[in-house]
Structure formats: C-alpha cells, structure tokens
Image (spheres, rainbow, N blue to C red):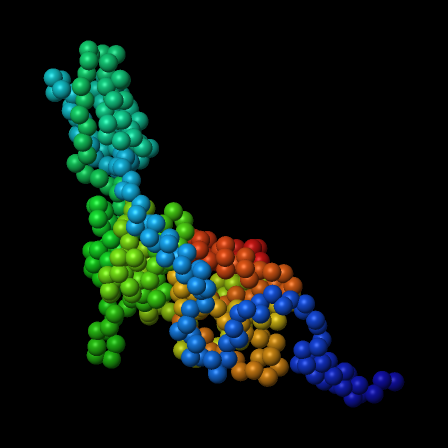
Length: 354
C-alpha cells in the first residue's frame, strides 16, 4: 500500500525541481542581446535599443522622404471637375468623378478619367468627341479636389479626413485637427495626447517619426511633408492599453492600470502555452524608438525574481520555445501596418502567426 505522504512528497519534489530551472533545457540562447528588465535597471528605460546603424538608417529614411518629389495630381473618385469644350458650350459640363472613376458627357457618355493627369484626361475626351465633331479642343480643371486627403484620428479635437495642399506637414495637420484633445482632471485642463505612442503610416508601413520633435519643436526631419493617403494616429493618455502577443492563449489588447504587472496581464490573456520560451520580451517606448527588455517568467513564477510592473503602451511578446522569433518579429513585423492593425483593433491572428 502506498504511503499517504508519497503523493505530497512527489509534488513537492517536482515543484522544487521546476523552480531550480533544471527541469527543462530550453536550448534557446537566441535572446542574450536583450537586456534583463529588473527593478535595479529601471533607469535605463530612457535609452534607445536601436543600434547606431539602425538609427543612421532611420535618419536616412526620413531624409529620403524629405527629398521625394511631389507626385503630380491625378484625377480620382470624388473630385469635382469642369470640362470645357471650346466653341461647343452645350457640351461643357461641371461634374463629380464617380467612385469608379467616370464622368458623364453628352454624345460620348461615360469616360473613365481616374488615374489620369488633367492633360491625359483632356486628350482622352477629345479623342472620344472627335467621332462627332471636328478637331475638338477640351480644357479640364478641378474645382474641388476630394481625393488629396490624409486621415488623422485618436486624441485630437477634430479627428477626420482632411484635404492637403503642397507644403503641408505633420504639425500643420495636427493643428488643423484642433491640436490635442483635452480632458478635465482635478479642476485642471490637461492634454489627452500621448505623442510617444502615436504613429504615422504611409504605404502600409510605419514611418519612424518622433512626434514630439515634429509637433512641439518643428524639427523638419520628423515634421515630414504629407502625401495622399497618409494615416496619423494620435494616442490618448486616458485610454491607456497594453498589448499581449505571441505564444499565449488569448493574444490581444487590454486596459492598463497603474499597478498592473506582467503576471496579471498573462492571467488576463489566458496564460502562456506549454511551448513558450522561459522569457518574455517587453517592448517599451513607442513604435518609432522601441526599447526591448527580457523578463525571466520562470524565475518570477518561482519567486526568485520580482513581478515586473508594466507601463502604458507596453507590448508583451511571448516567443515560442527554441526558435529564433525575436529577429523575425522586431526586424520584419515592427515596421509594418500589420502591427498597427493589432494595436488599433482586437488582434486574434497572432496565435496563428506564432
């Protein structure tokens, strides 16, 4: 007959073995360049984790954006144009380009002009009219351009879609949107904008801008010229979030509270999977200049290390065991709009990605 104390002894032995860290050789060693995040080195949070070469490349990217030539205007859906057919005033028309890019005219019917310059559209209309009148001459000019727009959302006074003109920069659109939204707290009016965690998207990729440099100091390197389709998100202080991704049961975003720690976030996220690595990566400081820290989750569970308190905007990344995901995530996913999609909408696809 098995002694009653044997199951308890087996459990305690297994727990002690787990806490020694010897129960499973994870064979990783791929994250050693990420600094450990402990109470003793909280002061280093202000330092950047980008290498000098990475910072140089980012500066070169911003310089290249500044040198880009303005893209010539092309007609798009929503634009309002005036078509003048010389010596044939009955054929002239003021019209709106349809969402699929057409304008309607007498004799020729629907003419597709989206994506064409004014000169190209005029020639196309002339060719269509030439079947009905001799040597038609057409002048075409926009009187309301609705397609040359950018979007600014988040913690601004008037979020929305705004038309842009040549020479308009990031700080200009921030001012046009009424600047930072405000909140009333303890009898005072405070800014709701969190510039450190704001981001700028162009062509589906995050542009590594420092919003404080752009908006508060007017630094032209970061206060870049706007282009059609740019998307600006101004993060809000009051809607503070933290993000959990990687090898966990329920990746996604969660409301941050001042006393929230790593273990609390993992619990909210349904806890980690069995395949996860012994450490988690905390990405802090915003998307433009991320600082990454390594946290030994196993040691925290064993009581050998303190639970790490999270900060607003932290991204907690739990890698899988024994595969080199760190470089894949940081070098390939961080600069893309895929990450932004996770930040601004609930993210369920991370579990499939990692």
